[in-house]
Amino acid sequence: MITLALAGKPNCGKSTFFKAATLADAEIANYPFTTIDANHGVGYVRAPCPCTTLALPGGATTCGNCTDGERFIPINLIDVAGLVPEAHTGRGLGNQFLDRLREADAIIHVVDGSGATDAEGNPVGVGEHDPESDIAFLPLEMTMWVQGILAKHWARLLRGAQSKTPVLHAAIAEVLAGLSITVEDVESAVRETGVDLLHADEGGLVEFCGALLRRSKPMIAVANKADQAPDALLDRLREDGVPPATAAGELALRNAAKAGLVTYLPGDPSFAVPDRAGLSKAQAAGLDAIAAVMVRLGGTGVQPALNRAVFELLEQIVVYPVEDETHFADGRGRILPDAFLMRTGATPRDLAFAVHTEIGKSFLYAVDARTRMRIRDTQLLKDGDIIRIVSAAK
Ligand SMILES: Nc1nc2c(ncn2[C@@H]2O[C@H](COP(=O)(O)OP(=O)(O)O)[C@@H](O)[C@H]2O)c(=O)[nH]1
Ligand SMILES: [Mg+2]
Image (cartoon, rainbow, N blue to C red):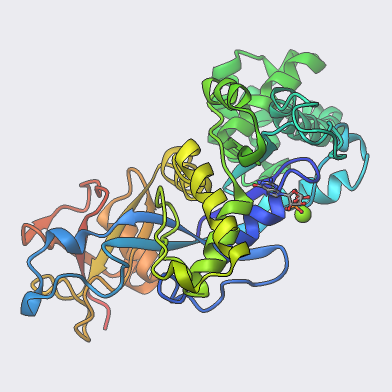
């Protein structure tokens, strides 16, 4: 399963974002382990369910595994405790927290977009700290951390390579294997930066490590606490590719949805209140405030951040394996029972392996359920594909 880490300086709202993203209505999440421990949980990406475009058996209108045609697909989320500047030198709990990022496929950098916390995460007045200055800090800390790991081994790596570049690249990948960095990553970072590692100075190594991380731990930033941020600041952050979010707003809405006070699906631009007369004064005022913020921001920004990390950074697509392509169902007649996140460029055989190793090993061919045509193993899967895998496995 895809793993996203929430990282940033203290008090930017990581834990609030984590709680909001992992709090799911039973309607959305039929996944049993929503919270695994305090820092590991299951969140969801949202995708349109293909059932709404299919002629379903018995004239059914939806498949029963989505909510109003919106599919919520589980991903792992990690709440990584706060990092302070210079963490890579061992300040704060630096190394311990950087280590936790190892598990992540991609990182959501939560920034206090309201400027109400200083560089160390201490509360200050709204707008007193420029959030722009926080955006570069996390990639820089991570770069220096990786550079530090390499520096520790560098003399040995150079000796072992005996002036042979491919040997050096392989040895670097081995040292960084715990970060799931491969030789291909190393070579791509060398190509991107043009750094000759055999003769690189510290500056060259830092540049190389930055490129390596951009490739192996891609990152997006979100400007949290946008509810209390001035519009001018949010506009500036947006221009720099950092969209606004209100994790606190999302958390309040998910709680309200769970309590039946509102109808809201994560990622909706607004919500509805079915029984306004039944709300307390405080509840009504709280929900009105959130509604106003959502109009200003176009939603809470939490679901879009998760979706962007998975679909844009990690280039995932959603594929629906079925056993019965005529009814788009599994062996028990459940329509579109599973949704799999797969990397762009995955083939039907990759899907077979994702379903089960044995099915992958004995893969024969696949059928596109929409066209009922056999598709070749070399054909690439497309987002929203419904695929029957035919294998020799019993
Ligand atoms: N106004 C506002 N406050 C928020 C938001 N998200 C978090 N906070 C507040 O910021 C403080 C720190 O939040 P927390 O999630 O513990 O931050 P962490 O240290 O990054 O995990 C708490 O007082 C939260 O209530 C938000 O979207 N808007
Ligand atoms: Mg926290």
